[in-house]
Structure formats: C-alpha cells, structure tokens
Image 1 (cartoon, rainbow, N blue to C red):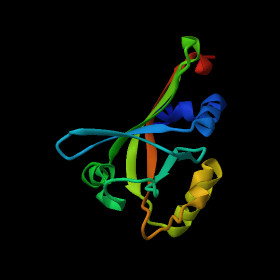
Image 2 (image 1 turned 90 degrees about the vertical axis):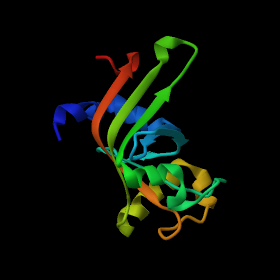
Image 3 (image 1 turned 30 degrees about the horizontal axis):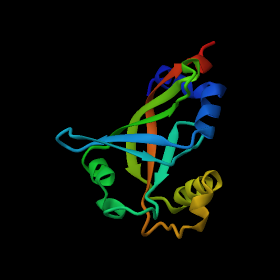
Image 4 (image 1 turned 60 degrees about the vertical axis):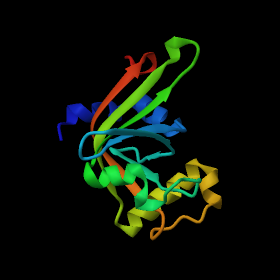
Length: 153
C-alpha cells in the first residue's frame, strides 16, 4: 500500500485524536452496493489497524447475523469515520479511514484487541465476551484522510 495514503496515521495529533475518541461510524455495503452505517466502539492499535467487537448491547440479531457482518462477508470494503463536533466550528475535526474489514480468526490477536477495548470502555469489563460468540473485526487502513484545524501544521 502506498505510504502516502497512510501518512496521516504517522502524525502524533491524529494518533492522540484516535486514542481519545469514544465513537466511530462504520459504513459497509452489501454486494449490490446498498449502504449501511452504524455507530460503534473501537480500538486503534497505533499503526494501521482498527478493531471492533460485536458486544452484548441489545440487537435484533447477534454475531455474524448482523447487517454489518453480513455486508462484510459480501463486500469487505469499509469506511470508518471518527469525528468531533463542538459549537465552536474551529474545533471540528474528523479522520476518515478507508480499508478492508475482516473477522479476527487468531485467538491471540482477538485477546489483545479485547484487552484494549476493555481498557478503553469500562462497560466491556462487565460483559462476557468470547471468541466463539462475539465476533471481532479488524479494519486495515488502506487510505486515511484527516480534516480540521487541529491537524494543520
């Protein structure tokens, strides 16, 4: 992958923004291109990978039956946006990540990401989350765009 497309992730300000952000919005599309967008909790590993887990919050379906998971199975291309809003518009900012999403199949990678998700979100500490019933997705960034005064030189 061209390093220039991922260059924003090398900026400490971007890394700090992603570390502190509490919510992201995931955009997926099915095989026919019909879009789907959901908010979610995430962990950024400090390199080019972002993780989310299908947790125990109430949902109409579970695990891989969720629309976002069905879409990933049909079309692995995703967009993830992490944004910040304030009434003072000079403080607005976002990081837009385009990449490929896939289910984490390695138990060690799963546990590392789960530990970090639990560190970031105390609510996850009380949930019984496991490799067999709670799929986790890794998004590997292919292209990143940042916007906002806080990211300007």
